[in-house]
Image (cartoon, rainbow, N blue to C red):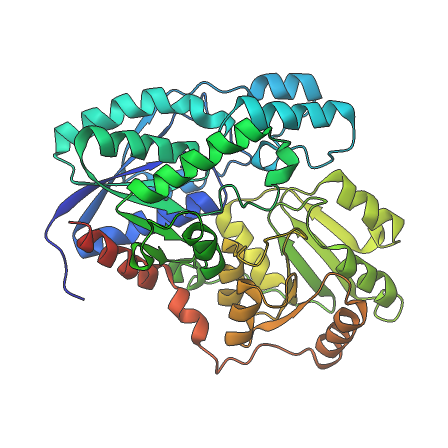
Length: 432
């Protein structure tokens, strides 16, 4: 690829080390590879002393230290949330997943109607001021805003209007089509305001990036003013450098089924737990390992189904430790939330699962984007949320044969972070 001339771009992202999670990984990896194409990123992010993160990964600070970074204060209501609920951690998306009690319904109603588009909008004022200073100082011609939180896109909207700057909006998740959106109990007025924000971002940005074809389709349907070539799909991926390292030798007669990341009652893991309950006596070496944040409702189901003794819980670990645990696994478990409009959910962990070259058991929409990629890479199989027979038979097949992935299929390599950065560079070039 022909390289661009030396160019500085401003990337506005709420999540940045010491925050952890896939949103951080996406832009940290892009920023590590962009200089190879003579594009030099400047990061504007929230000050971690006042920001609200679901998870932290301080190990990523070292990887980000060479990237020019500016931080500004943010003002958010999550400390009050934790005091009221007695919880130490934040809910996914600011949502109380157990939406049955009056109190939790009230919390979700407040979130959906008084914090539009989200509670992290308190960062926008200081971020806008600093972004303007950086644009003037470095003669920035292109900015990129990454979300969620989607309130960050409103920063791009104002900067576009003020500076007439080239603006690329990276929307990692759906906005008003996110799978848990209806649980925020929006009034018709709140929903209208949120959809208006979404439409304005789509119509006024110069380019839109998203992570899957299904999510692209959600956004395309929002407005007739959105041209097809304006929105591009750049999925998440894996970093070759993370998987080329030498990992400790691990051998065991046990069969480890590993799930990494956050999992709540919204995810469709029940059929996998039922399958393990059915197979645990026939295959005493079976083990279920969770690495990350596990909702108490899931732990309750594990206990009720009698597999507590073969289940291991490991709290959030640094990213490279997570990669090491992928290599220790015999099989990797991917669960996609059992909600409407979940076909486009394409989590970052999928691509690291592929790079680990272990078979993948996916529970989710069988015609979804994740299922298509797993099939394309011959990496495993996807089963519906009630297909107990299919899951049981698949597990038996893998256990009995100690089957590993077909190493001849290298399709997953097109999801390497460097190759995906090349696609991003093309968009940046076209935005000039």
